[in-house]
Length: 293
Image 1 (cartoon, helix red, strand yellow):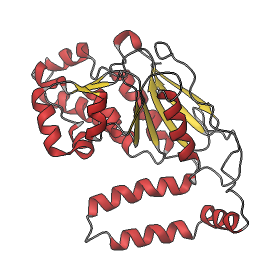
Image 2 (tube, rainbow, N blue to C red; image 1 turned 180 degrees about the vertical axis):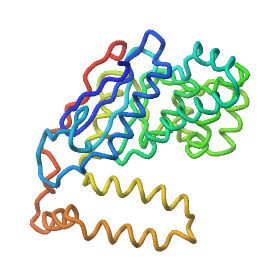
Image 3 (spheres, rainbow, N blue to C red; image 1 turned 120 degrees about the vertical axis):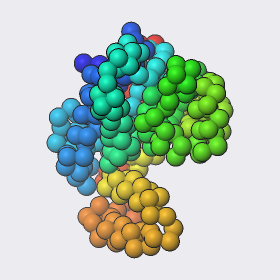
């Protein structure tokens, strides 16, 4: 198994753990990642109560409140496994389409997951690895992170990741970096919007894990049902555009206002109390993984 899962409080930490091949996407990793994120949608929503350790682990009953996606070693993800890519180059067109659809389905499972997904990017991401980053809701990166669409230098194109990346950084920036294959350093990626929160160091005060933990703590203050509805709202409004999204946005706030989570939160507000899902203790953070200490 190249994908590890650990429940830390109400957070599911998903780790790509194959540093020997720089966490590249072989067929097994693609399938495992897709299975993890697809399965979340079929779980029960978290109950409104304040259970500090609900059953959110592998095969658990409930969706986690937040997912952290990280990798072991010094490279976040090297993209497609080049050995398998070479083999596919010798296969026919339809086999290549099927393989690309499998990889694209994995990225879309991350993007469409009903739980906020936070990427912890400690090092370089190339090709499909950048697509995985772009599929996440919030990207927290350290100074050693860098990104490159190296496909053109191998005679390839950044196919199934292109919708995710263009959505993140825009057509003009994507055009420049898709065509040149040049590396994007962490600070430039932050300026482009590929990275949302940039740490000044990988460890120590204000480092990568401090910023990750602060981000997760902020998400844990939101109602889990509301976070899921927010993700659906964002996708729906973008798809419909301003002129056609009036009814959708009205229906979404009506749905949120009339569910149990909002009723409990509003009652807590008027009683000058926190909603029951907010814990007194801060989230303890991720366990150290090899190469990330």
